[in-house]
Figure 1 (tube, rainbow, N blue to C red):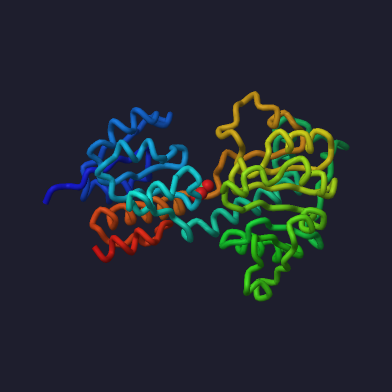
Figure 2 (cartoon, helix red, strand yellow):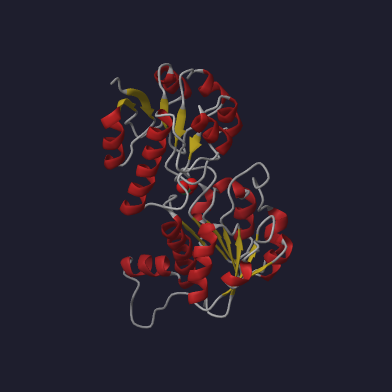
Length: 328
Ligand code: GLV
């Protein structure tokens, strides 16, 4: 049997690569810098499947250069880099990897909150710099216990963050476009967006990046928050207006920020955000454990191979095209 022709647009976890290579002839981009559009389109001329990564835009132009493409898979839950409508128009199912990264990403989001509140990272810097001397002490942190956490975007990861916060004695409020029908069983309360901003002591952002959520947190929103608020973004950098966040932190309008995502990404080493004293930035490592990255890559590989075989993907975003494939 002829092997399927597949492009893998970056480095992926070895077990997933091995699973794909068993059934496919693979062209893999293996340099650290992502391929340009023209490099990728040259490779895609004959490709039936594309295993893509979140730092690459899949748009009309790219799809137009890939006439044989039948499936696209990406090892990430977010898919703001993918023009879903363009994929659907071409009847190409797109698979993401929800579910498998929930607890790992919740650990990181809550870990950022806890680390910032208790200044763990500042403490380590201080010890390493030889400042732990008799009589010297670090600026004090703040308690989680008895405080209110506001989650913006209460999906599976937000629910897992809520559980962690409740275990630390926090009250949890949330905002989604619509209240969740079962929210009482989670022990959380719904708030309008503006009310959450004024009430929360800690805000965790987990909303996907969409045209509606782009720039959701700007000067007006930071101005509504308590001056003591800790602001945590574990969603996408562009949900926040970076300049407005910088101003709010620099002017003491809010107390602290902890970010797993930034706009731009990667954040240049000389970016003004990095020079602020009241910020903690992680390099987009929400799902970055060996176990979870393997699960994500294997699920994406499974989606890719199913799509190539004309079968429905396990986790498909544009389900209308997934079903059509099934009937074919
Ligand atoms: C990571 O940011 C993801 O979307 O999986």
